[in-house]
Length: 437
Image 1 (tube, rainbow, N blue to C red):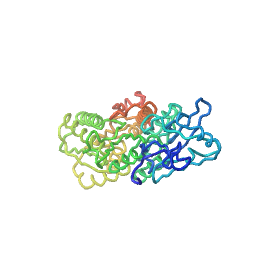
Image 2 (image 1 turned 30 degrees about the horizontal axis):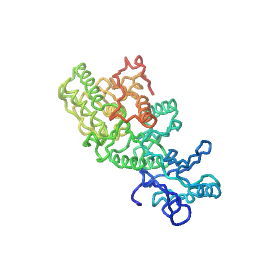
Image 3 (image 1 turned 90 degrees about the vertical axis):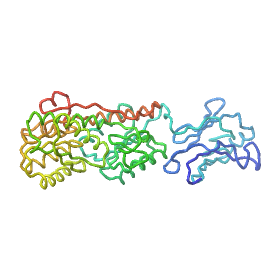
Image 4 (image 1 turned 30 degrees about the vertical axis):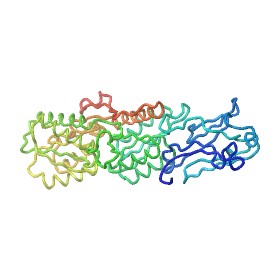
């Protein structure tokens, strides 16, 4: 029993052996599913309703009605004794069942009589009662980045509109912190978790922990695989439902625009290099970079490239790109840059600028737009020629809405829910209505 998570309900009370309560076994429910009873804090309650006739006894697990019984199985003597004594509740956590001597508990006269079970158990997977307020946790990596700040703001606004309780937790780039935050959220009885994992390798553990606790799990932005540490080799049916953007579509848009800018500039492949800057263990980054390279080649032909691994931050990209061009950049006059996000492109463009490359010899195409627009707002020339605008607020709001539909309305998660994008540049971003940090 200790390795499982069942719940049983039994009421031993009355002359031993036998009697109306079947002493010493009691009248019980048999084993029912109780996902997470071993791994998290659960609340058990018993309620007697004397406002109705016949009166009812109801049992609850985490606020959900686990079963109800009326007087049909009580005998008069049992009922009389039940009205006369204080009772107590015992929850045997190791064995995994709830027992109530004298047919229940807590205060004098709180519960009466012995009764068999009539109501079906709640598996924990259905929608909560209509009156229940839903509590959801949003785990974010790198929560200090502009995109994730916008995402958190959009999620909070949508949660407030829907009447949900939302907790946003920034786990940075720390996988251990992410798992700890997940367990804390479960202990605090969150109903659902939306997760941007800092490391896809923890995906199986995240999925397993949420499943064992009976908590709904939705991936945000980056993919999570339930059985493998690398989502790129995960079978489609084992990918956790996700809200975000299509990596391939975004990458293709970036690559096409970079190719168009390259052709417009009239540069030659002999003295031009492409810099790809991205975090190479993130599957959605891989999708974006590969799609961008294919789209660029279709538009502009083949150009030699540098593939630079980063941590998806401005500082990380700047350091890595500076190191690479210092070794391999001799004789290169023109540079084309794209990356997994705006941070990578901003970092690479800054590294080139610090190395003495003028803005007119750099074609940077961002992915996000939230940093590119700041360059365009200034008076200095920028190597950031364009950027694919992705609205973090839209993704945050969409994630919360998708989770709400699942928990409140019982609507299954779609495999993917995608937000829209738009390609912007210095001349179009203001009129597009896009926000800028």
